[in-house]
Length: 209
Image 1 (cartoon, rainbow, N blue to C red):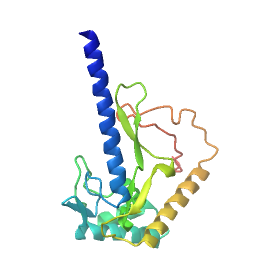
Image 2 (image 1 turned 180 degrees about the vertical axis):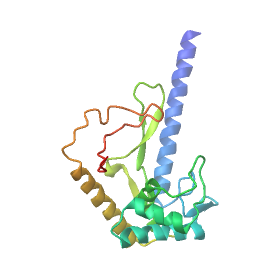
Image 3 (image 1 turned 90 degrees about the horizontal axis):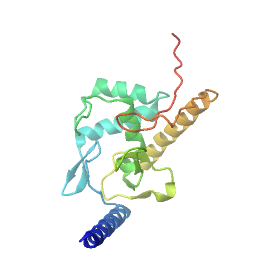
């Protein structure tokens, strides 16, 4: 009886792994063909029959986000404030905020879906150290494992506009890292948030008290 239970458990584990591999392969294939892999539609789009369709009111917000970001020498915080003056944010996800934030603007600019592309594999699951069967999402650092294909959906901004905004984001991130050079935070990346499990990093505050 114990032997049969062990064999059946092993077979069930193998079957689960096979299903997972086949599912991931199917998703990668669909992304390679420009299809949306399910889940919530990104801000600016809505899902109809499994396809991304432009939501006109939200799309105007997206277009203004890119225009404000590349049309000024300001950063994402300034853009978020301007968006809150012009629009009322539609709440689409559970526990979502009803206002535009700096993080929201950064996510918009970093997402190539808005220039008609489908990106798959930009984040991966990482096991939380010290936790059993608990994972959290992290950014995929190996660009070779990310699929970027022409999508079947309608873009909201041009590729040129998206790349200009994306380049400014990268330049600003590099400049911020350079300015903070020289400050040592010995626990950066080692200390984790007790709630979400994400790694915590030190950051310099330029304001004087």
